[in-house]
Image (cartoon, rainbow, N blue to C red; front, side, top):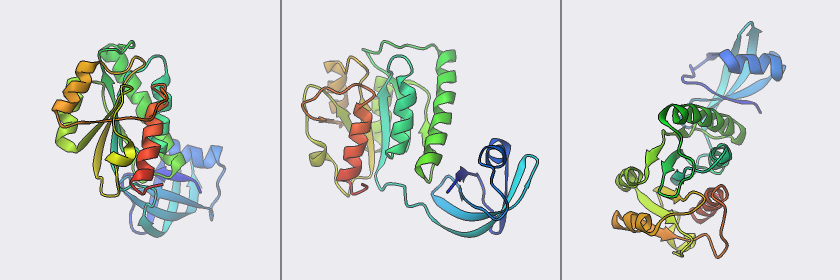
Length: 240
């Protein structure tokens, strides 16, 4: 069933405008009497029936509502070492699909891609759009936030204040099964860029309470690692 996010859903009727309204009428060619889902972006789904479609507006009647079942109990923020080319596009999309609630691009010592402030702002806006589309497609109850790029130490300090830190390192570490369970709440996952993390960065994470994890004996690409980690975390926490 088509799914759209809206800031506020009234008790009886709602009006969809802008790009979503055009998508409903022109791309999906939906008609009055057909059903769709509105989500308030904070975890509630509203089952709705289209009442009227006019130029640039779609009016729907709210039939019922319920909590979104797709939101995991573990809240994972992915701190991703800035990759080359357009790899971040895919990382954002797949991270949202596999359950991340937030994605933060991080500039680490071995990052090759180093966009300037203006370029980074444009990239972040594009990634946020990708996150929204992925949230619609995968039935999420929230639109995960894509933050502005930050430095490694600032990212670790922020993560240390908000929950557990799990940094994945090709040099070895504990398995996800040892580090994550059904009681895990807020989790910050750190993934290195193409060259991985420097030892000093690993040490800094540990000094700030971080734990070092492994994704097995195979060396994964930077765009593969966060998705493998999220899938394993969701399984270990009972969300898959």
